[in-house]
Length: 425
Ligand code: PLP
Image (tube, rainbow, N blue to C red; front, side, top):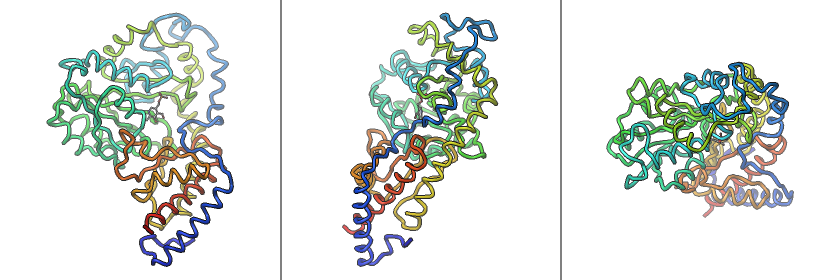
């Protein structure tokens, strides 16, 4: 392996490298690959772990005596809320168990804020001239498309290793009342894997905001999704916000989409009791109660909060080798070349790959032509615009390990070729 940084190569050596990578790429294309690293989905093997759900629940009544087949209980089944309150470090009365998608709950909250305003709003957001959100980047593409669909403008701040750049956020929100909220994926963020520290969480919950009804959409989608034995604990955002005098600022979301079934899990919302009452009041206009059969099924399946943690270890055993393989191939093929940096996440579903600025779109195009589907460059930025054209999100959980290896070998070739092309221009 020649690990000389591209920038240090002589013109002749660079020409040789370009030639070598072009040949490697032609070989790659000739293999007729059909591989896919775009989908942040659990693999079938992971979904199989939860198949006992299909035989549950064993009864129609919960321990607290609720007939789960009937209407009612908008806030969700008590036993399931108690179980997940412990896992998410909130009080049961602060937690709602809903349908299968937390993204739907996020959309409901945003739509309610736009139409009606929140518990601390002067008027509905829809009556403001302009509403803007702070978006740490790179971030989750669906957060951005959701805001775009509602006409909410986006301002970006960097997502650092300890969470969003809190000083940049604080500076933006201090004097601008049009900035009504921000996204935070606090644990093993999509796609950087960052974990928000206690200090950053404290800053975000305590910072003065010009908007009295500023909201932190605290999307804890990967709260329990550890890839190592060193399990990160999410900051206790509700307590921090309450202690700072802003109890209604955070709304937390989570789900079992990547714990049990991505299409038939349970989603959760946690917030101040006033925020919970606000959410349920609006929800109640369109629902007489959630799917409590599914709630009870999940209670029986896990048994205890520890049952959930134990179950997550089984997920880890399946997917950690895939992440290790991504790192191995990237290190072996690109290490020392000065053409890419990437993270080795301790949890979550993604690897964040930064290639030579100006080449991410080219890498994705080269990979597509060689039969490897990658998430389109720019996807992790608002309006799909990565100003540096450098970021690529890799999702290795879905394919089997052997396919991850093949796809990553191909990605490495494409990254090197695109970098050599650029350096030769
Ligand atoms: N939030 C983040 C950060 C995600 O990455 C995802 C899925 O990839 C979701 C939310 C979707 O959650 P749910 O399945 O509960 O709608």
